[in-house]
Length: 368
Image (cartoon, rainbow, N blue to C red; front, side):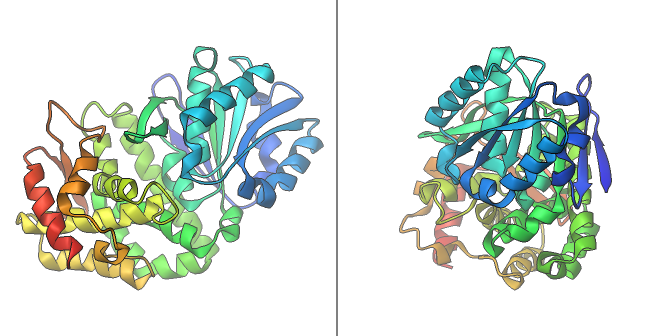
């Protein structure tokens, strides 16, 4: 098992990455579980796959699981589910010193973390991510949020977990599409700051996705360590460094919005397409070689992910996609910075990108 420290000033915690962690939940959480009843927020799919294991682990240590089981899917990150979850936690008499367990993917982690951040002005929570995307990205760093009609993750808070337990065994229960979607966030760490890791992904990504346990542990632990270093340096995204983690997300969120935040396009699929678009826009601006942008697209295509937005059949133009970007959280004084690439392994925040240029670029990509 790998243990990665996240050294946030005043609120340090650890991320445990390895196999067999769910059966050890009570042991690893230790004194954080102060009461007999342990409140756990999850979704129906995860509960069916992991609920019995969690209940047995808690029962062996004298605890009892109190379940809130939500519908699976992005639509759960809503005002309605947030309010209902907070009411449920209050009915469970959760105190500030207690820990709520978020058992699931990014949707459950985001919703539960946000609920914990506002419950009694802030209580504790433990992240137990069950998807590759959540293990390498959303469970670490303390960003919590819900979606609104205006856009994705526009209402939320920075609220760090007390512990993250990433059990690699649960990845074996994921559909191939979910696993691929999470892999996009693994590749992201190579593209934004570690060219050697991108090379590792090209060489080992297919075998990792096929189930090689050693490669999975390395991919998750390396990604978590990369994010931990960035979060440590810029926890609240005030210095611009943490904004680099949004590589591909401005384009990806616009694509998700255009597809109605539905299963038509998973978040990780949108991020993968977004990174291809960010690379191609970088090449269009003379920042990186076109062959490098092609290499990124080719890698996603080789492992079985869409690498062209034209294949989505969006029935819109570039201006419609840009309109979604106007609600991006990075908007500043009416302008939108874009995370672009100077080379594979070197991302930066470009503040001179005109949205009319982006719309024209997207028009060309939609008919590519």
